[in-house]
Length: 302
Ligand code: FDA
Image (cartoon, rainbow, N blue to C red; front, side, top):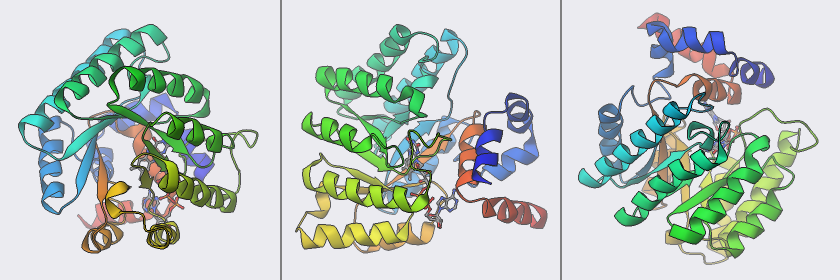
């Protein structure tokens, strides 16, 4: 099922139909905070009021023109400006293919650099999400360059990739902040562990490494076993609760989110918004195919 949904996530015709269908948009609303920035900011205010910080993601990836890439940059610059103006406790997360990575590395660098420079001026932060493994090297190169110039950026490491330990060590040595996730794309067994048990084992090893020697790492997962393991690890090593944060996706496992905040841990919610929601939505279905039945049932009830 995971493979099937990830295959569907790349189907352009289905994407076009879904993103323009009112019915499909209603389905996606569980995971997407709205079509536009004002809706997303209102959601961020509500989340902040619960003692949770946010990272705003203007949805989009694999743009096909440089004009689209520039429009993405402008949307993010506006988001950073509004975050500051409205006093929101939050930063932004972006995908390099949304900034033109498939079209021109130079144009992509210029677009992201403008945003990271703005974040540095505002005292804020830009997280560069990690996409499929064909982009990993280019993403890490660009992040290390931007960090050397502005500091105000960090990236994401995927525990399913066999290479990730080396990347964690490289980023930690340079003082670059890492969000650790399991990984959401379809990858061959030559680059990614095919079995969930190996991904989970690697996640725990990398999380412990980051908690001990990383820079303000983000433990991004809804996996209760890993969250419990993290709590025990930081308690046993006397690692301060202020020196790392948990991260979760908007609309997923609200029960664990509430519990973590009540227990005094730092938590950040990834808040996606915008009209290009289809690939993001399909990755969420791929992670938990049972979501399809819950979503359809709720829709039929409404
Ligand atoms: P796992 O998939 O094992 O799920 C554990 C439990 O969490 C499930 O049993 C279920 O209860 C719940 N759960 C998980 N997914 C769910 C869903 N979709 N719907 C309902 N319940 C669900 N990936 C990537 O490749 N690049 C990136 O940049 C990012 N960025 C990112 C940011 C943040 C803040 C998070 C939390 C995640 C990402 N990811 C990501 C996605 C990540 O790689 C992974 O696909 C998802 O987090 C699901 O994996 P879990 O760690 O939750 O574990």
